[in-house]
Image (cartoon, rainbow, N blue to C red; front, side, top):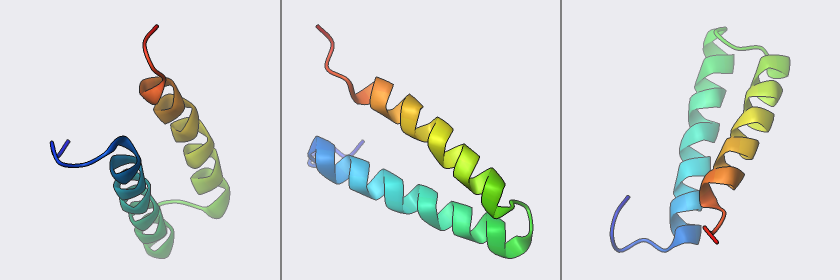
Length: 55
């Protein structure tokens, strides 16, 4: 992570990168829309857990 990025900037960059990769996967036929939706749902859970503050 770039030391100058805030948490929200990192999250925005990450989500844009993932979205572009998924679009490329769909365009090339590697992923279907249903697979992309499932992948995003699973990634959302993982990222949410990773970004939760440690208590």
